[in-house]
Image (cartoon, rainbow, N blue to C red; front, top):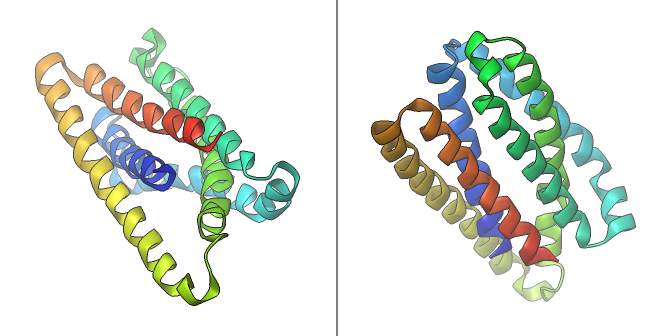
Length: 184
């Protein structure tokens, strides 16, 4: 359940973020892809530190990472809905900073999640368990993108662009809060 919640929220976040950067802010695909490098910077930093963080915090490091990622999503949602974003003043700068925070949260969750899930597996079941984990990750990705895609486009048609992005970012936030509750 934890793995599905994380991957459903994470994959759908990537989907909505790519749409928002290109369709919402008018960035080119190259510029939008460049914004994802900020996410990678935060992910890289905490992925390297994940073993030390997990050793210090134990299993709760996943919950802390989910809460950090959720805080980044919440601030990202607030940033997209603020009135100042209509003028474009600072929106992208704030967004890029928040992407580093969100990447850090992803690194704190993703790196220790697989080892935590597989930790109690008997050695002779390790291959099967890893296969099941990979399948659950893909199911979470697929379900998350399908659900948020439907939510996004339904809200987009009914109430406009801001509501579409707001609803989609809120879905991602909900998945992460569910993850934090499941881990604790």
